[in-house]
Amino acid sequence: MKKSTLWILSTLAVGALVAGGARWASQRQTAQAPTALTAAALPSIELAASDVFTAQTQTLSLGIAVSGALKATQSAVVKARVAGELQELSVREGDRVQAGQVIARIEPSEYQARVRQAQQQADSAKAQVDIAQRQFDNNQALVNQGFISQTALLNSQASLNGAKATHAAALAALDLADKSLADATLRSPLTGVVAQRLAQPGERVAIEARLVEVINLSQLEMEAALTAEDASRVRVGMTAQLQVEGVAQPVPAKVLRINPSAQTGSRSVLVYLGIQGREGLRQGLFAQGSLGTQSLQVLAVPVSSVRTDKPQPYVQVVQDGKLVHITVRTAERSEGEQQSLVAVTGVAEGTQVLSGSVGAVREGVQVRFTATATPASAAK
Image: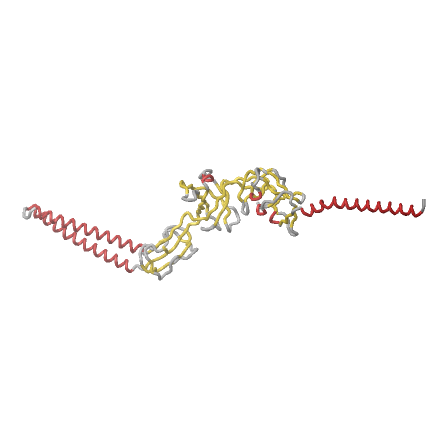
């Protein structure tokens, strides 16, 4: 065979090998491209630290959630009983007073004059009674001797009775004048602390004008509005643990009364809890807590993390960098200071659970965290 023929055949063979290798490389690249495109096209979500909670064993305080403002069981507003110029008001907010202590005076000159006037009218009426009595006695003697008729005696008897009635009315007017004078001096109706001073010396006050409010902080109450269902489970004597704003330690309380009527409109039932007075408690402070408290150690997540848009309740968890839906069973629920917690079964302790604020996310979505994000634990 000629050399030129061998050279041509060799060239064709090499060309065939190169073409086959190029076709194989092209087919391999084409096969891998969908996988790369699929990986690049997968949806993802970026989460912050507040978006994820770590499921862990919590101490749940079970019971009926109650809240309301504290109110003193004993309180009174001292009002003016007579009109006049406020001559003296000796107490201010925060001052302690005793029952019967004089706290204010209204200028008494007018009422002292009325007492003198009523006394004089009573004295005049008494003098008329004496005159009528003597007239009756004289007529009685004359009738007995036969000098006057029985009719004259009856007339004198009527005059005597009228004088006595006038005297009695004058004495009643004197009592009223004495009472008005006494009412010009105002006393505290109970032992306690002045909460409000509502007038100033020198003002002219009318009848029923509010002057001072006095409250007794030794016993407080909280009025809690409950649903009809919750109220049906409440009994007098049940205890509660309350967290009062500004007070570090829980405050014990006890159910004192249950309103027999539901509120118009809301249909809620008012329950009254008694609280023993202690340092730091004030009227008007807001309190919240749980009635009929029972503590349990359970695996819990925030209530908002449990979703119910499927036939079975589930939570959204992060596993191997992806989002997975896990069906759970819920049990006891507790109202916490920051958020409500619910006991769940079906997830392991330490599982990263999405917060309810994230919303519904499709399964299989890739999850990545912001640079500073650290999954948080559910607040106790």
